Each structure stands twice: as structure tokens, then as C-alpha cells.
Image (cartoon, rainbow, N blue to C red; front, side, top):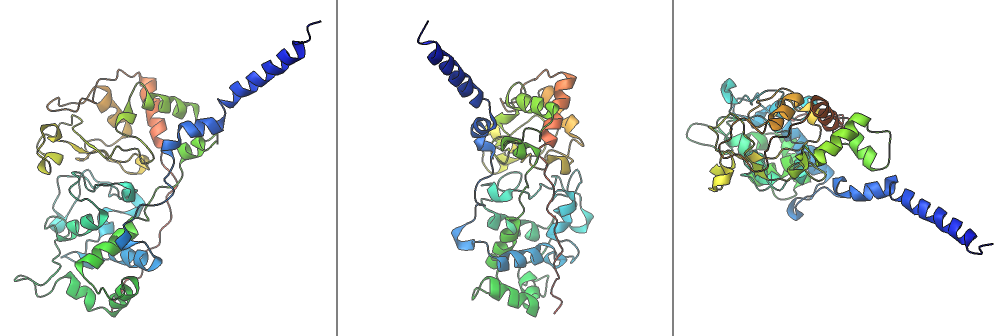
Amino acid sequence: MDINSPFKKFSQKMLLAICLSFISAPILAADLSHYLRPSEIPQPDNNRMTPERIELGKMLFFDPRLSGSNWISCATCHNPGLGWSDGLPTAIGHGQKILRRSTPTILNTAYQPLQLWDGRARSLEKQALGPIEDEGEMAQHLHKSKDRSHGLIDELKALKGYRDAFEVAYPGEGITKNTIAKALSSFERTIVSTDAAFDRWIKGDKKAMSKSALRGFTLFEGKANCVKCHSNFNFTDNGFHNIGLEDATDAGRYAIRKVKILIGAFKTPTLRDIALTAPYMHNGAYATLEEVIEHYNVGGISKENISPNIKELNLTDNEKSDLVVFMKSLTGKPTPITYPMLPVE
């Protein structure tokens, strides 16, 4: 009798248990931990979020008096019912002017180091006033001018409701361009994605994703190489790329940084809640995710100054379908939002 036989059987069982542990949910979650939501929402030390600042920012965000016409609010273009975008190919601004770029969602902008399609704003605070003052967008003056007897700051100061709200949110700082920007940013930082099917899956719910979505995720990280630009929790590298769209008239990031590779390059958008934010691309070129996938499958349309990351993928119809299903798995249940009561005196 081989006295080592029981030990061998025990060793085989242990080996099998160890092997099984390597394909279990916990190790999978560890492998995909870079897709997990950061533990905290990033915020600057000089503008920490408080309930009072968030509520003030919400009031300002939905108030059309922030525009020169008194009918455009931030929420006009960043509609919570439309994925915090507007559902249009490109935005419509002051005087019904059609603008050249689409309205990007403000979802998860708290996690982005640079704002706007060309990244010209280095924080939410620096971005907040841009659309308000832009003559093509909201066309509002912050201060009195030769053409206007009053500006936004005067309008807000005239309302006791706003005077009180600013004093509670920013004691002693008053109503200024800085406190307006800080309040808006505080509210916008609360606009974050909720757990989608993909998030539940990486946390161990094996039934959260369909087989098609799982195949799509494999393609996303592999053959399609989407992860090259759409990475980490927010599914963006926060970089700028010329992806070969037909529109060649917009300089994009190049207008900010004169580097040749940035001609026609735009910020990689988040894929979070992607099913809610059509049309897609900086110029609203595509109405569906299927069209987006086909654009990348053929390696872009315009090859001039195209990013080296863009190559023909040669995906089959089934693979393209699986990719779309996976991308839809990144859309969570929208958080209900109530409209604020705005000061009238």
C-alpha cells in the first residue's frame, strides 16, 4: 500500500480548489478594479461640497435668468431627461443660433481634469462661466456695460432669496463671478452615474450581464481595442484624438495647443450612460451606437491627421452587435431630480 496515496488525493483536491478560486468572482473583481468607481468625488479644497452650496448651484443651473434672453438656462442644453445633454446633433444657442458642436453630457464631469470638447477649461469652476458669457450660447453679461444697464450679478443681488442663499453657502463672500462659478460647480459634481449592469457584474453578480454583453466586453478590451481610449471607471483616457470624422473645419484641441497631432482632435467622451446621450461625436455625426461602431470598424472616414489608434477592425456583424450590447450595459438607472424653486423677490 502506498502510504502517500491519501496525501496525493488531498493535494489534488487542494489544487482543484485553488484553480477554481482563480476563476471566481473575487479574483475577477480584483482584475477589473480599475473599472470601479473612485471612493470619493474629486473636489477642490477651496470649494468643498456642502448641501447649501449644492442647492444654490442647482437653483442657478435651472434659472433662465443666467442668460441674456432670460429663457436659456444651463438645463436647457444639459437636460436631466436627456442624459444631461439635449438630444440635438449640435447645440442651439442665443437667438436660436445653431452652434457647431454638440452639447456634451455633464455626467461624471467631476472626474474629468479638463472640461469642454477642446479641454480649454482646467476645472469645473473655470468652465462654469464660459457658456454664460459666450455671445453664441447664453449671451449674458456678468456686469453692467455700455449696452446693458445691469448684468447678472446685479440681477441676483436684487433678489433677497439669492442674497440669503449665497450668504449661507459662501458666508462673507457675496455674490461674485467666483461664487457663482463655485456654486454651479458644486451642483454639477453631484451629477454622477449610478451602478449599471457592468458595475454589478464586476462586483460579483454573474447574472447582471448577458452573454452578448460579455462577448462585447471581450471585444472592447481585445479585437476592437476600444479600451485604448475608453479606459478606467469613467471609460475615457481624458485625452484628445482625431478619430477621422468627415468634419475637417473645426481645429479642436489644436486651437488650444499648437501640436500637429491635435489638429481636429477632441476629448474622449465618457461612455457612462451612453444609451441616453445620442447623437454622438463632437459634431453629432451619428444618431446610433451602431453607426458609431461602424465608423471605427472601417478605420474612420477622413484619414487626414487621423490618430494612430484608429485602425480598421474587420468586425463581423455579430461582433458589432455584441459591442453595442456591451456599451448599453454601461447605462445605469437615472437618478430622479426635482426642479428647484427659484427666487422671485
